[in-house]
Figure 1 (cartoon, rainbow, N blue to C red):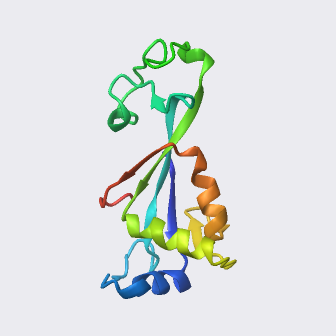
Figure 2: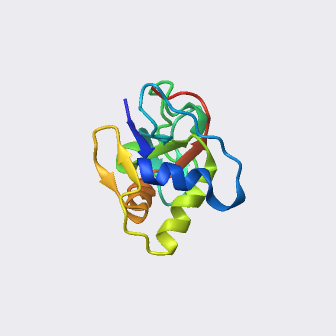
Length: 143
């Protein structure tokens, strides 16, 4: 499952010309002209103290199955006593840089929308990602 996030129309155009990049935006037939930013997923048990997933396959395997270590390999805290994390897969890291720029200059426009139509300012979207301790970059199609 998970939730997909996209640039709103205005910001998709802004992102395509932000600063000096030569990104060529193409219309995505499935999502009109919105540009896909990435996808947020649940990622299972995570030790926030040690900064590690408890998945036996490490961070690259958090979405493959549900095999977890019985305790944190760093501090020994039992898995059932730990919290959970999310992961976010960016389609391009330039999206993060542009969102950070928008948040830093105080842009309050709705730059991002999720697949359910929920609007986010850049700052609100970055706060949403604070739960995603595991972040990747992958340019595959997430539809």
